[in-house]
Length: 85
Image (cartoon, one colour):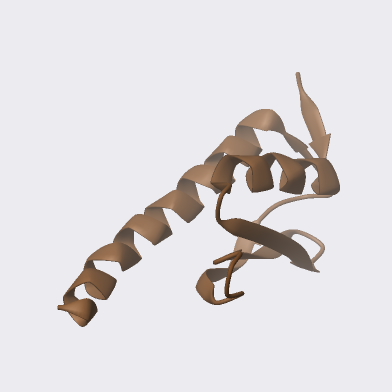
């Protein structure tokens, strides 16, 4: 099995979400806060707290985190589209 430390998992997620900015911090021993932001302005596009994680994770766990963040991002897009109309 392919295991990643928390910093390495964060790097994989940064690569995945590029060109958006991505940062994450552990807010408890088994959860994290993730933030997607616009690199040009620093504006936060999405912040999610309480995402289950560990200091060492399976690659499949990192994929699940990515999918959860993408689902939240997709859920936010329609409201921002309506807001700009």
